[in-house]
Length: 537
Image (cartoon, rainbow, N blue to C red):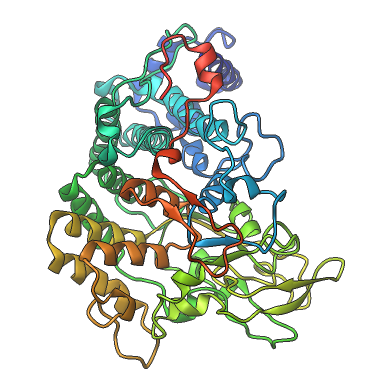
């Protein structure tokens, strides 16, 4: 951690030296922290932007930042999207291709070692989160004086962004590096807590899980208070860290710790302003061509085009988006998910649970192969199998000519959407034992996912939900709605204490099982070797 901190301070010093002339600091090559603090106290927005704007504007980019340490060009692990796709493969609902003993992702799908302290499939999750924490602490170092911050809305905004990102990263570490809080993790170790940075900062021991979650929640509650004080609500820009993003993360953290009332409160804040859900027309890819010459345009797919999707809370436009996820998930892509044959398919058991009146079923093929497809740019023929997903399907890139398929993969990205809020809220009610309210929330989602002209779906008439408890209904709808997104099934299985069991699947290539106890990663050797205070799980 010390080396990371030092490199960040050096980088910041170069930034400030470059601005010295404009800031009228003498001498320009020896800007001190005291001078910086004085400039911040002045409240001059132009100077504040010059000093801290670069760091503050970097905060939202950390959600999608590539180049994770020690991963090189390996798309499985050098972006957060790649990490989440790997998590997707470690569960029930995604069938990985048709044969792949040595393919990218095969270790995860086949339940080989991806958790031990020395394995290269472990430490990218650690490095991703710690880069966020260190970068956030770099900014927070200059925002420690509440008397200065609370007098300036721009500084409130900057501090709220950094606190939100730090909380997100610490929660990410807890999701990966400790047992779920409600499944035994409460009485175990959390993460070492750093609230500032310094080149001489002493390394720390791991805090308790309770202390870690208290730290996370304080960051988020402080961020929410700062956003409100600065009059920053839920903005129209999906690239902003704002009041909605902070509440979204708070709801997810509270779900892990069993603070059901807080889940409901946080989700309500967002849903009051963003109640709209995707329509049938925009839910997944639609073939506007023929069977022999399919055309799936990303412009009409809400998962690939943020501008038409009312659910997007956080995501980036074409050109700024990280498209690693779509590279894996798109069966017509020229990368991992398509041309290489590493198709992302739905487990037949889940497909069969989706109602015929639920238009989400149309986002997947059934037990019929799609068939031959000619992949650009070299006109290589591939065979697309049955149960393939069309949820992320595109044969063209955004804005590309209909005759040009070489730009496939040029799409937007999504990191948070409001459907998940409904699921979190419904779960919170179910966990409280309030089945009526849980079903009412689920009914909102189901009504929005009912095919045009079909009877409105409800918890009471959804075929696969008959005889289920309210909590089981929530779990099923999580799996259907968030299929292929964010590694959610893996993390939910861990949180709900549900082991992976593929033995009864008809189309899984690997029909193995995987225990919940094995879902917690060891602290990587990189930390164990250099931090004498760190205890292993």
